[in-house]
Length: 322
Image 1 (tube, rainbow, N blue to C red):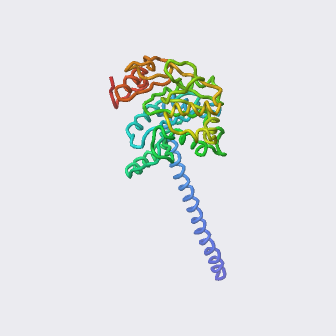
Image 2: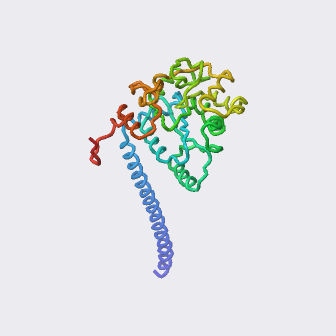
Image 3: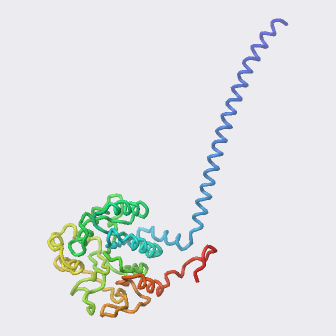
């Protein structure tokens, strides 16, 4: 009997320690499971929130985004030449182009101006870039007819050519003004049958002319293929002829360089606002690609109302617009 007590102690003590070890292991396992369960719950909640937000988007927007992701789509860069202080005009144009989703195209709209010169510009434009990422600041002194257009086109290859992305980065590049309204769906439709090489597209000047091989395209908005953009960067012809009305000077480059064997006159889908009437004006009509000389809000509103741009406004309890 006496000899059995030490045996019991030897048995009980290891068992006690084993039980403690077992409980510790069990607690650790449960803690891990609880932590994983907690993480799973967070992920499930996040996914639910994301899915809810995604479903809140209209089917039309989702379809357009899917269409715009195709490698076969036309890639277009629209550079709107403007001035650093035109903050309100840029915000307005962001609404105008942000509500257009052309099918079968990737259209990037950028605002283009020369170096900033004032302290408030450095802060406010930096905020715009942080929020919208749609501004190109050229290394030049602000001007209209002393080389800004050349600096714009010649700077693009270095900005956008990349071994990581598609080539060309854009099939077409446009220069336009901040008083021109482009209807992107019609623009894309007009480009689809055209060549993606050696192309010069726009509104032929002078106004009565219909022959794009005689003169040049109006500065309201003209478009060229990427190979011509690269030619402008490399050729001495543009470098040696910078000053003068920028659209006419551009036409001189094309003529002297024997470029743009493919040309497209978009008249009368592009035209000046009907009032005051001139040989360059045209009544607003459904097949419009672009309207120019929208110099005040009244002309913008009349144009936007004519094309019913707010017809797709979704009904909501949050507002009532008759």
